[in-house]
Image (cartoon, rainbow, N blue to C red; front, side, top):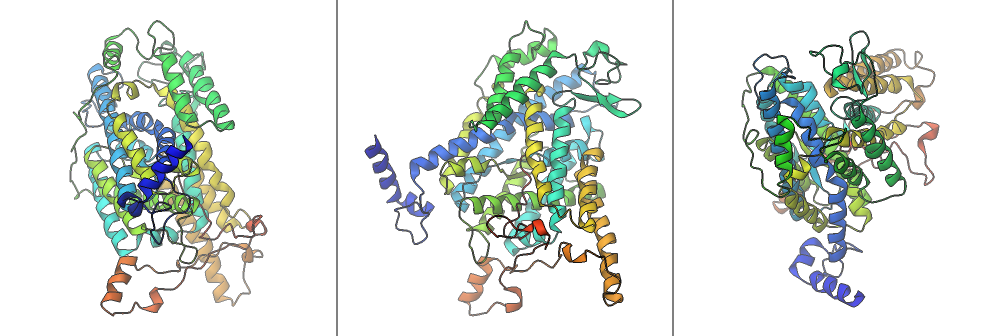
Length: 572
């Protein structure tokens, strides 16, 4: 068996496939050490298993926007059976959309950029899209169709920024404590969604304190017009406890022992328990809506065409609120995708130690931009690189074959829409809380030693979940940072250093991002024409650091260095 595996790897490596993907033994001058064809296939399937939860989770979050369903009373239509039936069909559309765009974007990332990075609609951005922009069941400041148009335009703007080499430069201009704070704030936001009615239902509404304990049965709501506002008998809903112990605690134990695809396993075990009808935790109650869902579930394998969300854009760019949403999508997605791609390239050993850029970075950014626009045409929020790609890389994935296999696995998932559409919210709620707990780790990289960095970062973290709006958190952080640190800087300069904070030396140094903003293709083109690049725009990258005592790790690398900082906001 070992001989057969070696022969297959050798034959593929010696083919045009091996040379294109730079497999070990291909003879390519930049072949990737340790990359083997069959290992890449295994790594791609591992990445898919780690990412597959996004199919149901993304659909569960985006369905709360109501999609293209129309609520005639503009009050959310929570108890309107016709509207509820329409939203159920929107969820099935979104199952197909999520799997299809993940298949397309991951395949293109592997084929064109030769990176082992999976792509799919990102957590955090989908929550912002649903709850902050469109609003629950369309009660936000712009419609679902207008929001899709904003995402569509975002993709084309990203394409231009990528071709001009500005995208990674823009990601580095934000103070690093705020970059870390945005990721942590999104983690809290996602966890809150997982704990509320869109997930486990542990948190409900409260007429006095705004939020309180939930988990009561529908008959215990304080009023029929106030769903999830529990009057008495909180924490009594059996589906909530099923989600907590199976979708949450069991999943954490699986992760504790490094079981691959732990999140996906937890989601499916919870769902399987919820599928039998004569139980108190069934997802298919004996109602008209439950009968319709059960009939669809019994099909198991089928193709569900897009009935509501395909090409549903409203290009109303004359509405200023559309541009407000677009700008927020732009900046948050820059931090998300750019940081994740840099992190995954470094993890796979594909980042240049001198320039600190990674191979085919411009192509990767262009693929991401194209996928964002295509995702909008299919009805979903922005597509981004997934940090779960690290699972495949750890299995030996080093080339684009890994991402292509991941894409093919997502393509197969399109035809299992009845299964993914029948995953209840309490099965995904635990996963959202766990993902949020993974994202909160960013707070370790915040410079807590200097209050001028700590307060803006804290405001960013706390305002994102409390306002249900990523944009408000980012704005609060940037404005407070400029006010606090701008004033301190001005007083220091005016006084010649006499009026300066006592521990100003431990402040995070903000500088205009060093390094070239000229993309490689422009350098090559200019070199062929004999036109030298202006040296002032082509300087080597320098690490930006904070001199805090905790800044040095056991390998004596600066944690605050731009080369080492993990700017990711996972999926997500």
